[in-house]
Image (cartoon, rainbow, N blue to C red; front, top):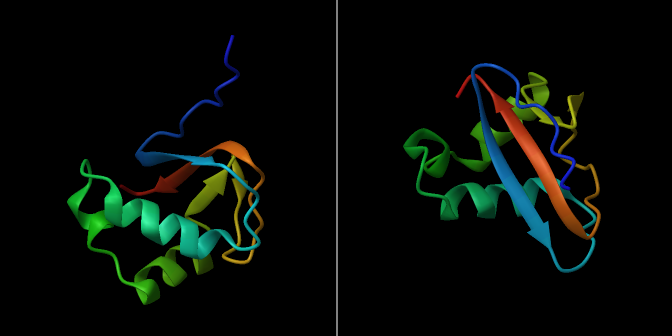
Length: 84
């Protein structure tokens, strides 16, 4: 049984499935957002726009504030972006 955390209200969830750990999540998240097709606003987001979301604490992993420099473990990570 999968242990999927609850998705916050008024948020967009993107699931990252990594083959290896990543040192920084910002580059991985930006690439994943540009590849997804469900949310046009996030698909078109700029690097500066993503940086602003991190600064405003609108990007969460497991309900906790994520930093652009946060590392990501191998496997599945659920990232919630508030306000989308």
